[in-house]
Length: 429
Image 1 (cartoon, rainbow, N blue to C red):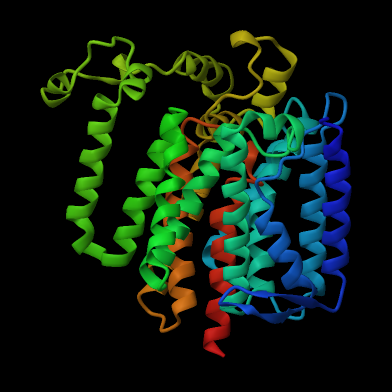
Image 2: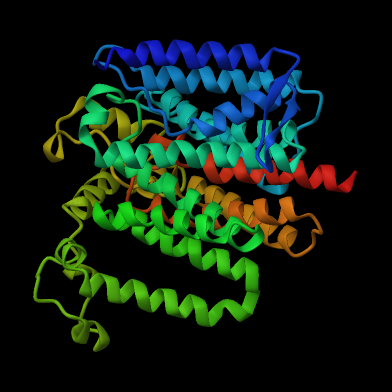
């Protein structure tokens, strides 16, 4: 049944190419379901691409269909940037991102495996292309909402499929990304729904969706996405209320700590010793040594000793970690380090980590500043979603393979940021 993904891939690729290169077409107006709106080719392609980021379309061993889909989408984004009648919007964040990519390219020159280095670069390149293409394609709030609501609908379907196994086995075998990737995608969908709750009239529905997208990470006990969700919500309220948000942020932090100690499944997974309690935490006797990292800490130490030590500034070359883990059976045959921060340091040193952190902080600052300087409801919604989701997804790089899932994870905050830049440019005119 998983062979269906070849058919799905061909269909979505054909539609994407046809829409991208066409003069345009109509879609239902997200602000009025009774009306049709006209979108040009790049706009329709953007709605399709942003809406379907959760589709992995994995295939049997022998052909990495997910990698092919990523490469095709990057080519389409490049084509779109050149054929779009509007220009991509450049900011300090996007310029630093280009510098970051160039540093990765330099890293290939001293990498033990340039082939793996090229694959790593493709995964980092996709969010940049998404951001630049969105900033050129999107100028209207309706297009932004159409893309965001489309992504949310696909995310809702993925939740239904995840909790009804028969649907996945019969209709959607390998169609959606893994649970960890979906949970990180839901961080962006959660703050998108929260923004619509505050800035539109559909309060109950959007509050329901905001809560819905937080539930899976608790049911699946994915600590990384729980952390990312809480950080995203705190960032959301900081952007919205500035310093007045501090009591809300404190409340969220307290709720997070309470969840760790009073949700049994989360408590059991969090600590090596199940007897660890909140009183010990209050007294300061709980340390990182008590946290159960599922042997990740040992793996990170092993990789850093091999690739980061004595190469702290530049690392051992782009793709070093993936080449090592794919060609050697270590830690039970794991192929990924479960920490993009560790992989950055090992592959490309502190320089890469600093550059990437600068990108994220510049995006957040731009979103914060834009949110409080605009008179456009669309720009206000898009900016708070972009900034909050960026911070939430960024912290998940600490203990997950977020870059590997960039189609489903990083494409969301960078896509929202690109749309914000496009809407902002339209507002200036």
